[in-house]
Length: 194
Picture 1: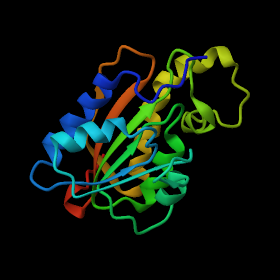
Picture 2: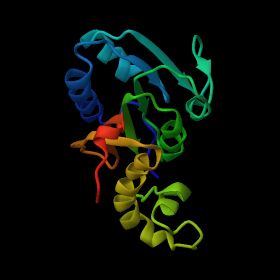
Picture 3: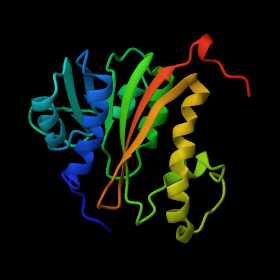
Picture 4: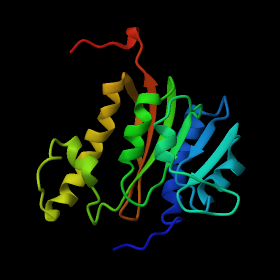
């Protein structure tokens, strides 16, 4: 199993975040919820480079000066005001993703770290997104399924009247995928007949 490292592939993680911050948040500083803060290295660097209106870093691991909380539970509650959500997990980000969709504001930027593609971290939600949630899928198939489940999981935003404006992935030297998504609530004028 790969060693858990908060700072692995820092260049790729920063690249995707810089792209979206420059493109969508240069005119108005974002309010950031860093769901899996770890040591806080990513946003320490980014806050030196970009204006940030507010920053709230949380983690399930206790650390002095930080609120120990399950950020998935925060995202599952209506009323949070952040317009940038960063989910840099060690494994699957889908519990966080599915928790935030019903409560997302009109415009939102989300950063997701999709765990080790080498080991095929797909999880129950990834399998369910492919319609395989009730099947006993052999572990040997998880790696291949993990690669395609990302698209299926991201597409769940349409179920909540949210459309992706941009989805981009940072080139990574490691086994994880670093994805940035800009979301917007669908308006009547955005409706498309298929």
